[in-house]
Image (cartoon, rainbow, N blue to C red; front, top):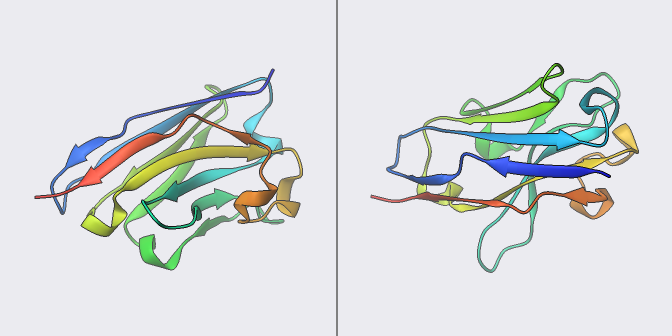
Amino acid sequence: QVQLVESGGGSVQPGGSLRLSCAASGFTLDYWAIGWFRQAPGREREAVSCFSSRDGSPYYADSVKGRFTISRDGAKNTLYLQMNSLKPEDTAVYYCAADPGGFLAGTNPNLYAYWGQGTQVTVSS
């Protein structure tokens, strides 16, 4: 049974940092498309950062490039998102998602079959 469990969200001031974790079970991270998505109130869910390309290189949304870093630990089967220099516009519910289709899923949230429960990130002074 595939399960994704996020942790690490919270409230932080602008300029602060948070590290999200996604513990995966029921599959091996290295062979699936996996990534972080977010959804702010009134907005569509969007890809933040994913491992979903043919060459294995990570994708970053333009809005987070240079501030966020995605990584994975194969031994722990866990995905991470290090978020630095957080801005109020980063406020959203962050979700971990995975799909066995690999690069076919890309960055389209509609093509990801499995989702975690989400973790709230609030950036506010």
